[in-house]
Length: 602
Image 1 (cartoon, rainbow, N blue to C red):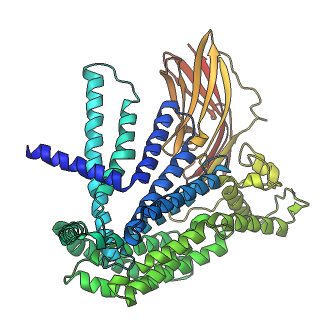
Image 2: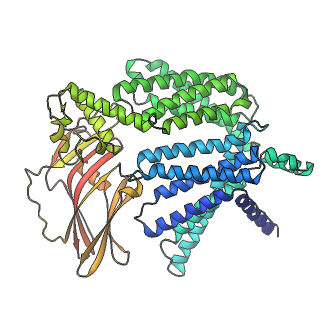
Image 3: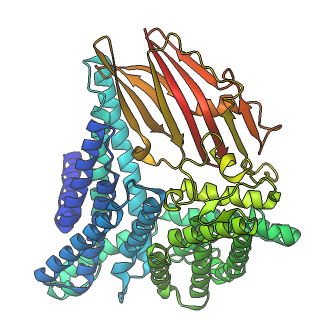
């Protein structure tokens, strides 16, 4: 009976959360519906709808928090809901103009999601006796509790479906994805919202003393720091942060010289340190003991020179590499962290929430043209490329003039800027840049030299490229193959937008050649009419095969491939697949490959 009553109470809290956030529930239901279609139809791209509904769900949750804090009338609630729907619609049309859900749209969406999450935490604390630190603790606890419950339920449901499929009868292979969709899209966020207390607001005047006392108890329980979490923060996380700080300061003092400021190691270390200190400071703000009190007094002041180092290092890298969207955000974060350090250092703990206002201002700046990260980086990289080309007499009347007699440093700049513009799909907007500039030998034909990348320092970034030497190997034997398909893959092909489904037919049988994203690369597979996978090829094998002997000897250099070297074959009792590489390049996490797929159906 106790277990049944507990289950009943949990279901009741979920229902109350759904009633409290009705518009959020509608958006979450839309998210689940989009995922259902995505699972069923596979190759269709629903990312624009998916992220629109996610943004809508977050906006509506924030709107409800604002309503509870400052308003009482139903008409005011309806107006807030209308504003949420309008903003969600504007978001959809702002990304609809793009043909794909690109890195630019993805990054801007991520910034919006993060900013709205912070507003969700901050909103109930505006002019309230509840502090931002307390609200953050409540959300922190609710998040990890939700993760735990969701993981247990998802694992249990998946295990049950798997057991039924193996032991009793065949279950559709989409059953588990559909089940996980419902758990992650509906249960998890609803459960999280059910753990969010109803904070003090304007409607409190209509409550009785008993109701106010009951609400105070719920709020106190939600914002209190659990004993074990307090021990973890005070006696483990803070000492580890102190040790990390000492190591970082020693490293800075020992290595502070010219190359140190532009090294690849400094910037990510300082950024990660600043994030750690800010997070630990907020969590420790609810605790008072011999570890947390000195930490709150000293470490925000240590944060100030550290983020100043980081920002200077980032600015120096601009002189060398120009502005990219990543560096834009790193510099913006440095300025934000410095202001946050000032707030934490000189204002009372109750004023910690002011840093969220700074965060929101910077978030809006970073996604608003023409001062957003992507417009600034596109203009800067294009101008840097134009400047370098003109200095070498390589650009005249919007036409690139090949020139092999360019300094190595300028070759690196040209390669780097063109690579960035190409990876961000900006090259298509520059009329004098050719299409597919990194395929085959287009780069050399355009600029007069092969790509030249920065040599890695201490095992850093590596780069390779190669292409088939058609002059030396003009003939390819295609005997015994039924189909030849031209394909390409690129790291810039994000999510489902880079996927393909090509229909094939032989002897009255229909087949589908599928290109699908798998982790960082793609898989090429052939499916039968009955949706049976006949063969699969992981494109990562292409890079492993072509560059297997180039790790040391040919890093940063180009290779001419013979047909034998450029050919990979995979075969089973149903099908033979041969891949012939036309051109391939890899730099850091970016890559491009152009190839032909030959199929022989047995």
